[in-house]
Image (tube, rainbow, N blue to C red; front, side, top):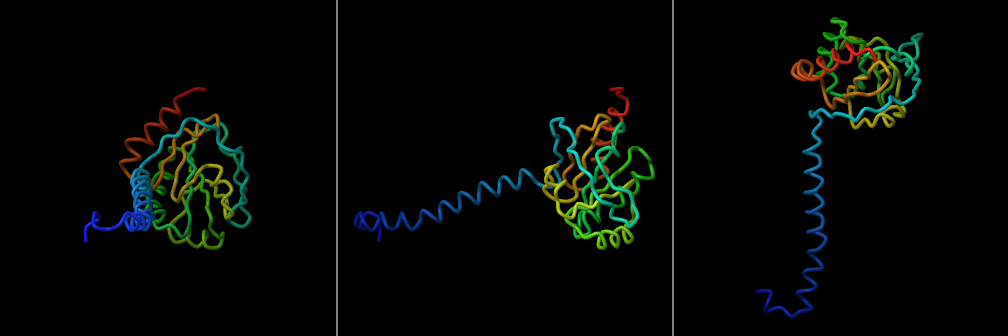
Length: 190
């Protein structure tokens, strides 16, 4: 039976029943597009903004705390990672290589993780970090705007975040984006 053969009331009822489905499909399309555009392998350039103040307890027993003051006066990297993160395990060999090159200190932030799991994970995958802070509660992650692990932040000598890498650091990302940025920031005097 065609719509024209249906009485006007029945057509309105049919449209009212279809409205939630159409609204859901429209919302799904918008959210799907947003997820596609924000794919974790894409890098994000942040407007220069100050690194938030923080002080994290060490992951290692007897280790030193990690705070904003530890990064002062140097170009450095903050890598947000977790033992439950498969992409972090993929990225770890690259971080180990970067740590051996001494291009810039890499500070680790164990995000939404348990210290004992983080320690076991580091024992299995290696530890490239100058110092590691425990962000089990996620407060620093919130302040940095972390959306998932891994994420890496490039911080200049003045304590400003100059770049944010969402997802693992790859050879291409390192060679074409991060290494040139770090070299440029290190050559700046102020």
